[in-house]
Image 1 (cartoon, rainbow, N blue to C red):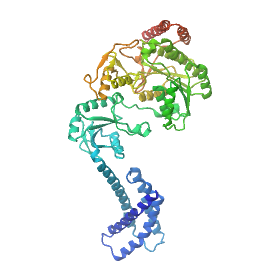
Image 2 (image 1 turned 60 degrees about the vertical axis):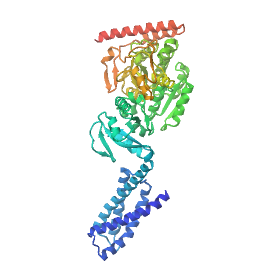
Image 3 (image 1 turned 180 degrees about the vertical axis):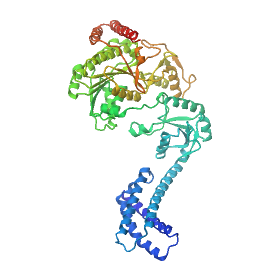
Image 4 (image 1 turned 90 degrees about the horizontal axis):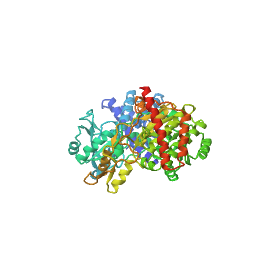
Length: 613
């Protein structure tokens, strides 16, 4: 720091000297008399002294010249104004026998500001150009998609790093800035001709901002494939600023291809829902549960109690939070089964949670077909256990994470989740706790889901196994699903089922082909796809709504609120008692009893549909 001051002060003293001298010359039309020169030399020492004191006290020397920003320039203008006012005040008091013309001091004020700006801009330009020249032989010529703030921000960030990419053009999809320059880089109209743009600018790479929708990324990626251009995704500026990710240049992933338009959240509403509250999350080590914890922490709760039965999973999430800024939020890790009511009762008693997010569940459809007893125990009885504790301890809000497989279920897993939804709804009718169900489809990259399975099969050389060429599923990224869960939780009323808008269903076959392509391989030349047929419990198409729910109103651009038929708490408790007895027997008995219970629910729902119609 001291070295920087010693190095900068002589430079600025020279600048102040030149500024004052030019101000005199301009004032007297470049024809100065001997008397005027004597006035200049008499005024100069006092001016330099005062401005030097302001320079040092204002710590202007502490601001990096190579990273000068608009805020730096505003600060500099303020310091120059203060310095000039002090100089004017000094000569106005009569302390000095020599008083310069007021017009000279005004011109000097303007010139000192302009001189400082030119000095800083020159240093920044020279440093950037020097860095570019040093790396020029290694840099890869690159296009950037878009000409908006996201695209421009990417270039600014990369220019301050040791990135080995040289940005040669912006591709403007809206034709709003064609034939213009941004930071000296040309903007060209994009008409799906990446090959032409790449040839014109000799570019071999394309940067895509992380804010671009998945549909657009999919199209760009295909054009890049055809043009022999390497596509990369740069994280959105909001993600970098929030600290969720670091600036990086990554290859396109399946999440990028399926990403939807950014969700506009009511941040104030969610913050009011979570801030300074004690939050308990079950299934906290799972894909959804862990992301819930990460996003909840951003809203500054007092405490987050993480509950999961997996010791290893809890260890992993604990290690992940070591590097995250917890903002003073207390984290409590509890290893417990949701059916262990005595342990959970002690947890509720000790921490008195205001909110509970119940994400604990067994979700793998074929596995649960072979293990109906454990599916019922965990998904039904475990949910009942946590719901009862929330009701007994006066929890303010309870959110059940449900699934599209609970709609007209054909699987054990979906059936158990429907029973859990029904029990929650029944308890909500009499409880002071606000019970809400949030239902959505598949999330990308969750443990045991299709994406990690395809990735493993591709790494092993194939084949990639798809159950049926026409099978479709709804997909959403984990962060987006959790964002909408939090938004739905803040919007919903007790007993409601809130359904996330999952967008258009995706063919699993298309997903497999995309993942093969993203791996740098080609189907069927490099890797094959085999069709294995539907597995036990699987549907060809998933649904998000029951018949009566299709009249649901949107309470948010991406959230529906479904009206549900009333249900008797006594009846659902009797059904759960039947299931509890059934799991003591064999698999066939458990499966039959669950089927009987679900058949009753579906029949009641159909009757409700007819009455509503």
